[in-house]
Length: 413
Figure 1 (spheres, helix red, strand yellow):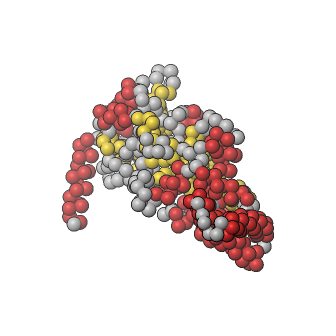
Figure 2 (cartoon, rainbow, N blue to C red):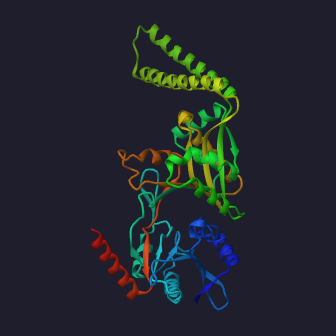
Figure 3 (tube, rainbow, N blue to C red):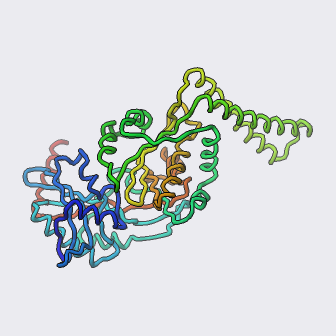
């Protein structure tokens, strides 16, 4: 077997069926403007009959006149558990890249290093794969940032009601409340990028043009970016929230009447019920005032939340979501996520990647703990990925490159 160059069609066909498929190991990813000046290689490990056993997209850039860096985004399309195949692929890849005058390769493999459940207990361990990669001279170079290590993913062959059953109580409540106040969902076009960006810009370091280019590039039948809005009609909103407020007010008054008849004597259960109703009533009162002001100011529907996804074969990847800060109590992103899961589950999608979480997600004092609680509320598992890896292709040039780099760092101090 040896590494051969693949056509775009060959690579697309292979990447579409591989179980390691992801949004970066695609033709679309290689065509992002970010990589315009990179050399693109679509490579496959093939036998004498041109049967492909593994493949990868490689992006090459010049670091200096003598140093070339190769990058395999999100790892290789290979069965990482097959140690013999991985060894052969690595050996042949090194030979091929050496001919391309590549100095070293960097990759961030996306195999499931460990899988943890919502209680942070390990339910699957694939640490032996990483140990095997170390034996093949891949070096651990850590994570680029504190959000690169973990994703939360729902994988299910079950019916929708089973997926919903795994949501936690808070998630279900927020979805129900959003439905009750009349939120409508709409799919957007590339012309709506500006409105989308206004809502999510505080959550990202990317520019508006980045998302425009992303949506423009991921626009094929195999890999497609889509944006959804949560819309609210002011008049409908006022009618529904008024009804909800009055219902909770009646419940609160009934509790108070019971307490009055008992001369203020309350059981612990009754006390908790009153405290909960008081808090709920206060929240609905705040939303009611918002609805009243909204009907005085606006007549047309307003966008209260948004979510962007990328469809990759049978996986839905939640790229980013956000809400209009003025309407944060409406919890529109909960309903958006559930609506998207329902829509694409009915179209045969089985994997819903809710996106990254912070490395210190389980620490309640971490400022990103709320992000973790929001995503884990949808009932997925925590997927831990291995660190970024470096594979030296040309050792003499690489060693010289590192020496020069260290000297520059020392001089700059």
